Image 1 (cartoon, rainbow, N blue to C red):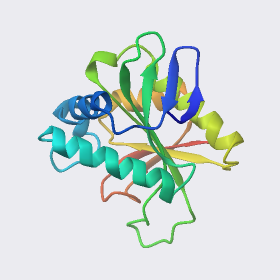
Image 2: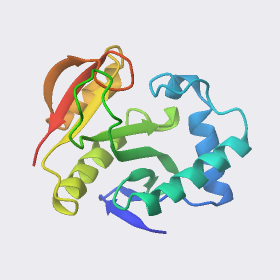
Image 3: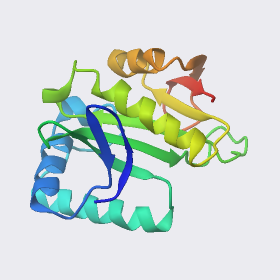
Image 4: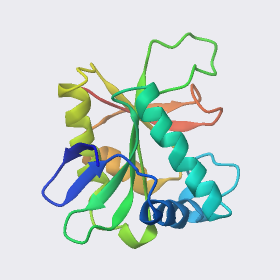
Length: 179
């Protein structure tokens, strides 16, 4: 198990091709209340799709070292609460060339909502981004009606830059963190 960062309560680690990780991936990403915020066309339909998602994540760890979508495991129980991501944003939709912007994101199972895990894991991941990767800034975007994610961005002390349609062909609230 490759650990990316840790907090007192959480371990941020690579997803693994294990039955437990496949089952939890399926349980998280089969839920409309999670996927509707992610731009997924449809939630996962079966365990095979979850296994394929983990395979893509594992391949991504090798293809883009330092970046990825990682499992957030609760230290006390061993249960995966959700995911956090640090990844290059796609080429912008607005015609203005990108300059290597990096995004932080989080996706948590509803049974883990309201416990502070998203902010705690994201704060640790920002520390990783600024110290280990030496990034000068990290972006976060969320649909304007995604109040829980916007609240996490504020809890992290990120600066609100307004609304943008620069990425993912959707209007989004845009936040920025700097070391």
